Image 1: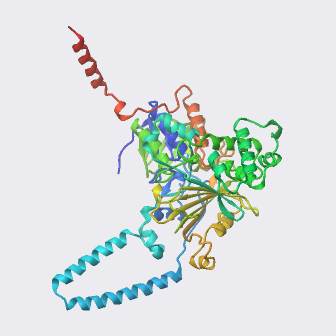
Image 2: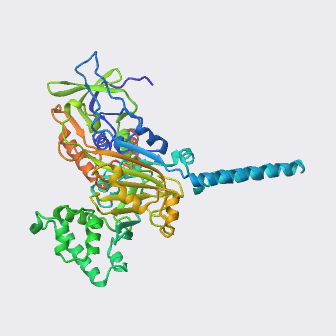
Image 3: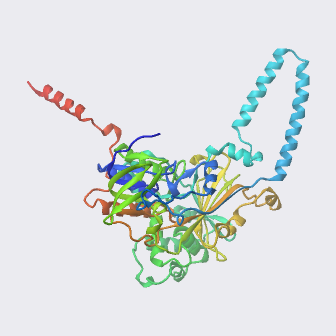
Length: 556
């Protein structure tokens, strides 16, 4: 569609990641003229959610801008440094099952032929009745997926039933992000479910992590003495801000000095604190307090998950921005921007030049001449579609699990989603694995895959007692970790760069960065004040009419 944008804005935002979207909502909410554009056809960038078929497109090579002959001074958007890396996916087709399925189909075809011959000898009414019954049964079979026939074709046919996160996130019930959702009234644009159980890998099996006092005392694997020790340590950690005597020591050292048993150290270090062996003590204490503060607000655990995928979160902030006048355009040919006297002047969208006072963009949009030549860090990611949960239960659970570091492998966080989250269809599960990258995603997660999953039905048959979930589809990739230090240099003074995803479970760091940037741009304005509900909005003319009516009624 060919249309013209207004030529002057207060702020232009390029990219629709979570930080860019928060800034967009905050600026629009206080009355600024916002233009929010992206060359992609979807919201979220590296924070987006995709259908199964759409996420496979990420493996295709990306085109980058070429120098503009007509305007050689144009700073071209985009760089290869902060794109996804090592993208690889696989459909785990089971040949043995396929052969059995083909034999079953042949048998069914023979039965149909014989049935048709019998029907030829019967009257037309009976034939019609049989056909109607057959059609009804076929409809029922289509509506009820059969786990025995999951293959590439079956999964792709139901592609839109999946919402697969590039960056899955959970929210602490009393974290900065949830408080922002409530205070700004953006919570009305999204739905959430509570994480119903937390697991940890201990002694070569999955174990429940005791989250609350009731969990601790109901846990039969923890002795009475251990329960008292654990509650004593949790109470102490929740009442202090800093342990001065452990300033240069690890959190594991602190736990060891408390003479805790190995299983209590495991629960606290790898579970409640979500730390590794070398996590500083101060960080470990903050993590424990963060966990404990969010207990009991919205559910049994401290965590919430956004329905229909984490990609809904950036869209929620974009909706608020649009409500207050933000102009949005996806799928745009965004070429670059011009600079004069070390200040951003205008952006070129298609062939149109648009001026603004400020420019905000995501890290993957930064022109390469403004990037520092730093050693790049990555986040290892893996997404699985499985045929059952990692730990069977009578009801479906939204599960968070931890796999501690071993044999040089990193600490791994696991999020398992069922159909009640709106991210997959019953009876399948979506499983997200994430960790700080050590070597490659395949290597980083190899121990987790071997311990928790069966690659196919044959490996499961060899260990019938374990009954591991079978992997139907897998995808590995590396996300750039852009949250450690300054990654740019020489930027114009009114240009701001938003970092991408991090390894934290929540968006708290992103909220902090968004607020910092907003206050740099608009130091005298409120950051995301509460938006009124639709029923609270009174049109000016109606308000005047109400006042007149009241005055008339009061006059003698």
